[in-house]
Image (cartoon, rainbow, N blue to C red; front, side, top):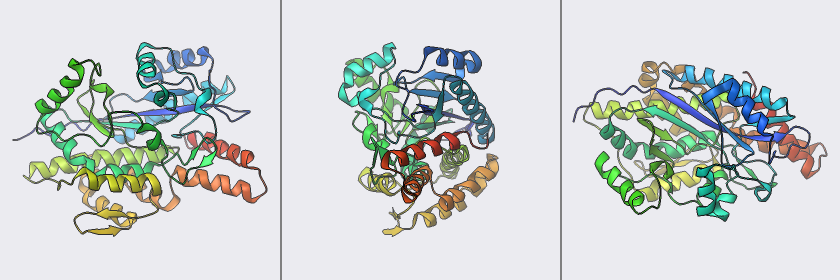
Length: 378
């Protein structure tokens, strides 16, 4: 079947945690005036999240990653400026280094009230934030075809984005503890495989018809066809503390989809692998981030992550040119050099301990790094 070339438009959503500048703890119940001020100044691009200590921003539909990057810079700066008026600051991290989920309060909205009632203790633990990247794939059938193939690359995207090594004051030993929390929910993890778009809708309708979910927006897979937009929505990544990292990962995802479309246009496709295999790399990304190798299933070998990324970037070079995101893709290699937010948070903690700080003081140093870096270079 021939498909018209997709628009490959891009939109990015980021979730932030609001912290008290003096205590560095989460602002469990930030003043309502803060959100109202954000909504007045940023209008439709900011919204409350499940917990009151969270806030979400989202770009408009952008023609390029560069355009989305510029909008995110504006949104981060505006949220930070407004929060500062109330003694608060946003941090772009997928977990808070030490605050407890037991003291958080969920937002009083119908959708969130229903989620809290249905999921109970599992929902109360959702003190996590992520980054979602939407790429415009206009044709329903092509969207499902690319969904089936793109799962292979999800561990790579997670590894580059990790920002959640701490949980309740402990170094978990994982670069992305967020996924451990999120996977307590149903309908998470790798997406299902579907023969056609109609096949996908039939599966959704089984759940909606019996009242398990109201619509497909309650499928919380790592990658999903968005319910409201003609996009594929990548959801596996942690939220990136450095804005440049976010742009690089968004560009990588966008280029991967164009590459898969390009293969399809030439009557080729990426080889399909069972979820049991992809899940091994997914776990390795969650545990080690970029530090250890991943399995190259074709070669049947464990390969250093840097080598896998170098090969992938070479494959995607023409797609980066076509999508005008070569500079963003170049930054992917920079993440390998400098480390992810998870590395920097652990470094900030260990540096503080090394100069005599207590455990609590060192965790405060981590929050200070997150506050500063979230708005760095805006």
